[in-house]
Image (cartoon, rainbow, N blue to C red; front, side, top):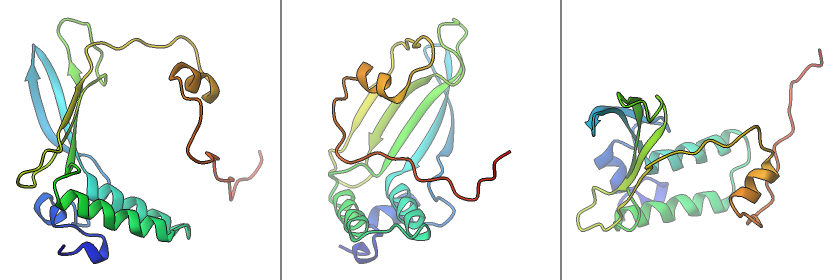
Length: 164
């Protein structure tokens, strides 16, 4: 696979994900009208997001061999059309019916531009139900039926903090 040795896939070149100006930012693709609503359409290039994560970990001195291997594997799977090249995110800009608020998620679509790819998944949120009050992490996990994590989830210690 061309470019897989350095973690850059062929998909990066086709999608612009390998360019330094992409980083991990979501690109605003435009506005879309659907069912009377105005939706904002954003795109995130999956390989660029992975490369941004690896670069951040490298700068923090936390890069592992597993990170490098994951990036190469992801590049190979994207090039093979198994994983999507990008994710499209749509949220509500305006809804004349008043049923949805600006910023409400509307749709997430994973897709691939690789020839013959079957990497496609789409979720459209029909409604949102806000939760009452503020939840702790433990309460959130309980509501989502999360009973265990694959690895320890600990916030890094704060540095360069002065007490007031």
